[in-house]
Image (tube, rainbow, N blue to C red):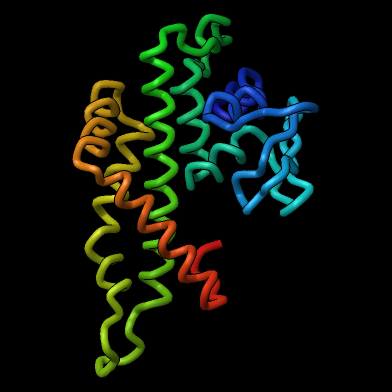
Amino acid sequence: MNLFESVKAAATARQAAEHYGLKIGQGNMVCCPFHADRTPSMKLNEDYFYCFGCGAHGDVIDLVARLFNLSSYDAAKKLAYDFGIDPDKPPAAEALRKPKYPLAKAFQREELHCQRVLCDYLQLLERWKVQCAPKTPEDTVDDRFVEACQMLDYIEDLTDILTFAELEARVKTVDMLQKDGMIDRLEERLKRTEKEVDAHGETEIG
């Protein structure tokens, strides 16, 4: 079995969605995380997910790739790491169980929250770097372009740590992001930008 086959054999779309904090309702339906979904419109099946609202669909690897803005390979690696999957042998049932300890669950929620905010901000910066770049040397430089140039590498590094690093490094990073208030500031920045986009009818976020 290769990595992709091992992951898909060991973790369903529903298990991954639950593990990464999506609230599953009746009939395995959840609010789609890929569009502004007020009532659950995404169906989680054993082998795949499908959103009746925006049409997003795919297998468990596609789900995680879209949730965390990863390539398919990196999403498969993340699933293997988070679910304790070894491509060379079937996963032990114990490895698929969620942490029993409240502290572990609390950290998992905090880490997921930080990951989501960082991923959203990273996507915003990537868009700004392209959309807000000066077209000629005489153009006034857009503040959003400057912010993208200054912050992209740093946010990318933080996202990589929370996605792939050992537990100790991830705990330290989540602690740092929360203690200095950075994650709250970024979340506020994203909300403010969404309001500005709504007010001007633009399509910077979406």
